[in-house]
Structure formats: C-alpha cells, structure tokens
Length: 287
Ligand SMILES: N[C@@H](CCC[C@H](N)C(=O)O)C(=O)O
Image: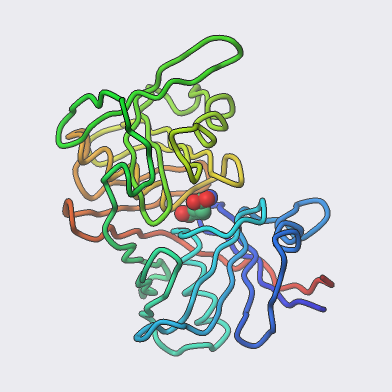
C-alpha cells in the first residue's frame, strides 16, 4: 500500500506520524521497523499511530512503536506531536484532547504560544509495578526515595550504579551523574536497558543536577538507543530528583535536542510536561 505520513519531532526526538483513521493500517513488527529505519525506510525514533478510541470519554487512541518495531506504552514527546498532528490534519477542532494510550489516559493541550503541555498522569513508584525486580536487594534511603544498587558487567569488570526506578506508563531507571557530557551513556545504557532486574527492559536516564530547578539529561531509550530528548525520561528524572530532595518543581530539563519543562506536585499527582512539537515534512512510502 501507499502510506501517507508526516515527519515530526519534539526537541529532536523524531517521529513518523500516521493517520490510522483515514488509512487502514495493519502492519507487522517488521513493517514498523522498516518505517523507523533511517537507511531503508523513513527514519524515526518512534512511529506514532493515530486511531479512533476504543475507551469511553477519549477523543483518540495513540499507539507507539519504537524504532525496533516493538509497541510500547507511552511517549511524552510524541504526545505533543500527536496533538499538533490532529489539529493540523483537521481531525479535531479542540485545543485540549484526551488520548487513550496503552498506559492509560493522557491529556495534551496546545498553548497559544505554540508550545504544548501534557498531563502525563501520576508516576508509578512501586518497584514491582515499574516493573523492577527488587528481590534480595538492599535499597538505600535518600529523601523520600529508595536508591537501588544495580550491578553492571562492563567487559569483565563489575560496576555498581545507584538508580531510582519510576514508571511514567513506561519504565525508567534514573541515575545522577556529575557531567552528562562524559557520562558512559553508550557503554552502560545498553546494559541497563537489558538488565535482568527489568523484565520488560527499561529506558536508562543520566541526569546532571545544575541547580534545584534545572537539570541536564541524556536518555538511552529502550528499543532505540540514545535519543536527542525523551519526554517520559524527563518526567521520570524530575520525579526522581524531587523525591530524593535534590530538585524542586518546576524543573527545566536541557536535553541534547532542546528544552522541556516538568512540574509535579508530589506522589499521587499528575506530572505536566511542556515543550515544543515541530512538523518537518509530509511524505508517502510504498510499504
Ligand atoms: N521518546 C519517548 C519514549 C518512547 C518509548 C520508549 N523508548 C520506551 O520504550 O519506553 C518519550 O518522549 O517519552
């Protein structure tokens, strides 16, 4: 079939966005992977599918596929691209929408200045629900959080890293580093992503604290590798930093591809993610 798509990005985290309301989309994991392939397909960190909702009270259903072809629960930067896409394509006239995802309902809103704020829902902090297997591990208390020691095998050497585990619908392991520019993202990112204690794999965040309202962040994303920004990763890092008593809301997050802003009032409360969404080009591909 000839597929119409839109290429978009949010702070450099890039997407192929597909209207699955006016096109009949039934792809295999290999076809999703091909769309994400930067050499043989279009190229993107994630492919986002817009569908009619199946849950009552929602305007749309939002499905997310990583570049490796796997379907995942949540994507924060993608949710901003999603609301801009449905507005630009005339699929809605509302500036605030409710969106059904695999991880629950989120609510993105187009602001007058073109930025987008998303109610991402409350973070999940219980290890078993992230999911993270904490059995026989001694958590180290810090602030209101437990830091978990994770043993990494690096070329014969063993190294322990201290992580916070947070789910924003999708799983995150966040560690504090002195300097994100020299943090071993390429080396330990893949080891954390596939660590046996994360049965569904995990997104690995490396956060440098600049001051109590400002961090720098790099994220090695599950199913992709390092991206220029990760919206749920920014939410998870801010939540972890606030819980540990290192940060106060709101938190400015500098990613390599742009700036995001996170606010969170504390456990049980939703996390709000604000940032840009940009349409790059429209295209068609035979698939
Ligand atoms: N880039 C995203 C997260 C996309 C999904 C992630 N790779 C996962 O597997 O959970 C974001 O902006 O949140």
